[in-house]
Every structure is written in C-alpha cells, then in structure tokens.
Image (cartoon, rainbow, N blue to C red; front, top):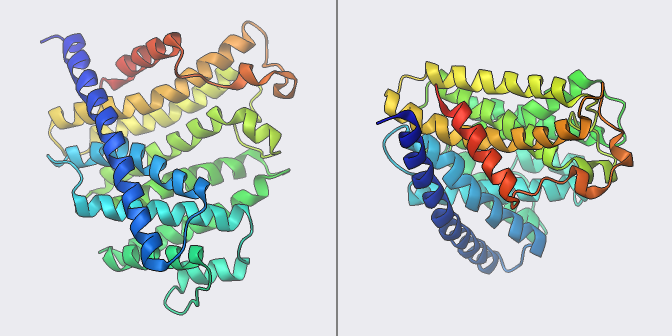
Length: 329
C-alpha cells in the first residue's frame, strides 16, 4: 500500500476517533466536575468549569491516547479520571494567579505543602483534593517533584510577561518550560513505562503546543499587553524557521523511541496534526508579510487579520497538506 493511501486511511481513522472521543470525554469531565461540586458543597466558576471539561476533552484523545497507543492500548478509565483532576488543578492554578485570588505565599504553600494547607474556599478545597490525589498516585515522586517545581517557577515568571521588558531568551525559556513541563507532568498520571526518548517527546510536543497557542492568541495577548514570542515577531519567515527547529527536535525524539515502526508512524502522524495548526498560523502571517522585509506592526492590523479561522475550507486543506508532509519519519 502506498504512503498516500496509508496516510489517508490513518488520518480518517484518527479524526473519527478524536471527534467521537472528544464528545464522550467532555461529558465524562462534566460528570466528575459535578461529583466534586456535590462532594465539597460548592461550584466552580462557569468559565473554569468549561475550561476544565473542554481542555481535557480534546487533550486526552489527541495527546494521551497518542502516547498510550505506542504501548498498544488507549488510556484507561482510571487514567482519564486522573487527567481530569490534573485539569482541575491547572485551571484553578490559572485562576489563582490570573485573578490573584490567593497570595503568593498561599500559592506556594498549597502547591508544595498541601498536607498542612488550611483550605477555606471551594476553589482551594477542590484544588487541594485533586492535587493530593495526583501527588499520592505518582510512582516516581522525585522526578514528579522536580517537574512541578520547574513548572511552578515558569508559571510565576510568566506573570512578568505583562507589559514586560524581558529579553527574548527569557520569554523563550518561560514558553518552553510552561508548555513542556505541563505536558510532561501528564506522563506521570499514566500507567506506562516511558524511556528518555518518550519523555523527550512529551516535553517537546508541549513546547510546540505552547508556541501554537501563542500564535493563535496574538490578537488577544496584544490587547492584554502580554509579551510572547509571536507578539514580538517581526519576520514570519524567520519565525517559521524557529518553529521548524521544534518540529525537527520532535521528529528526532520519535525516531529514537524503541517502539515498533508501525506504532511510531501512527504516533508521528498524530503529532504532525498538532504541528500543522502552528504552521497554518505562520502561513497566514507569511501572507501578511508578502515580499516585504518584515511584518506590519501587529497593533495596526484588524482582528480578522490575526485570528486563525480553522473552519475555513482553505485552512482545512492546509492542515491536511502540512500533516501529510511532516508525518513521515
């Protein structure tokens, strides 16, 4: 069977699975959220509740199931429950920091001394319950602790991106640490043995996801005066080369994994589908730049020039084209 036909068959199968699973997993998340609310006698903020369910609903089939398939299976119900608790923690942590609901001293304490923390609000109680559940489960507590400390530092440092004068190198490190370590953390919630190359894949795809999110959020971040690498971009072609270094690193890590070639090919295709979103955003920016030496000032552009509409047929075609190109290993 030619690569094109194998690609088409696998893409159709994965797309069908993700669409079906996304609906089922979002429902699962809402059910667990409701159970937590009933147990603790409170409610999440509507935006937080939706963020937990929607984020988990797409994350599990696109990321965690892709890694689980390397080991010949999908995520189990127990793993799925842990991942929902992870999104409860991550979403509430964002609320704590973005809205300054608790002090930095409280944030440090609830994160690293949860056994001694005295929760008073529903959000604190929900975070604490999920955090302790995950902390008690993980087997490699030393590695898990190291990752959580690095992620915590990056999340705190990211607050400096608001109206910042940070050098690009510091923003790059914050971006990579936030994205990379938040995804690598999830590897510890699965009942899988992952070697160094596989852990490298978890981290690297996380950096690509964070860069892609920042590319899609250029307009929003400009309105909020948040400095990101894409916001500071002056040349779309140069930034595309930088983005490609992450793809190259990811493809090298996939090749280095000890799994059978067939499983790695399916995994590589799933990951290429993720890279493609960032490449579509960059393609749109290259069209804005055209033959000019640099991009126009983003602040002078209308919202529609910076928003990536994935419902456009042309973008769906680009997604297939980029996925086909970068799926081969």
